[in-house]
Image 1 (cartoon, helix red, strand yellow):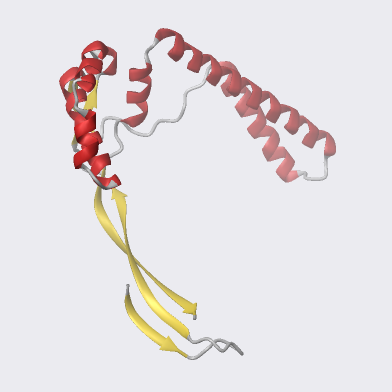
Image 2 (cartoon, rainbow, N blue to C red; image 1 turned 135 degrees about the horizontal axis):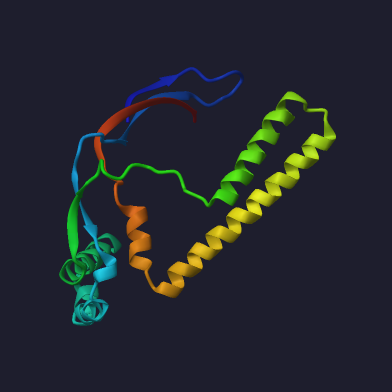
Length: 190
């Protein structure tokens, strides 16, 4: 916080106004190629991972780390060490994986296209109730088809016990780098 000034009250208030600036750092995406560790959860040795975590003296860990931050850091460290020992990994470029749209089957893509077409028609003719009703039916159909598809995919993950691959697909390529500074000036009445 910087540039703190006491100023005249606003309107009929008997409280002074305080002007100040707050500087906030926000991460921005890095577009350069970086190497990140990608765990191959489908090849993990879960029995060994369980053994490694069971071998940790958790009582000692709890007794020497007195604050929640220290305890969390110690827990994360033990977990990271065990994962590094029991889960194979490789280094991949962050630029290889781009943000992809979900790919749906042809039936769902056709339903989405139909809904989009009806939406455009509704926007050009907002007083046409028949068109609006068709749009709402198409919207419900899309919602139902997507929900059924997502549920089916989740069931496949659960039944094949391939949770590692499922999580890895959603976590790789989220690298942050440079920091931007954002200054926000605020006025507060005291």
